[in-house]
Length: 120
Image 1 (tube, rainbow, N blue to C red):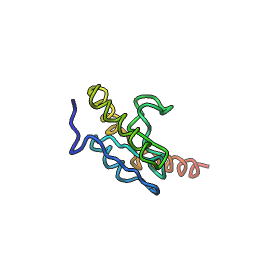
Image 2: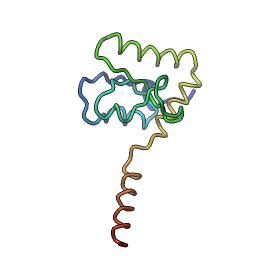
Image 3: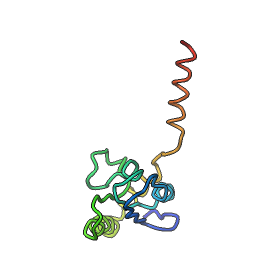
């Protein structure tokens, strides 16, 4: 099983989170985030079990409510995968490390727009 830089899971049960930087940093190092769907985390963490995204883009566990049951459900699903199917958990951690949230793609899109305008 592939090892992360320091933790297997990061839980971020924030009620409010404008950017969600902690899960982005965690994912960069292969730590699987377990987050509440709020702010930037709702845009960057895609649930392993319930996302409509392709499996290769799923990178964590998401819960929506603010009660203990919601947190325990998501965390339980993450721990069960890690315990029962460690190879799949390692693939999930690899998905985390493969996610690109840098400015490379948006920056290129801006450059493309400027080039288009420049040539008109």
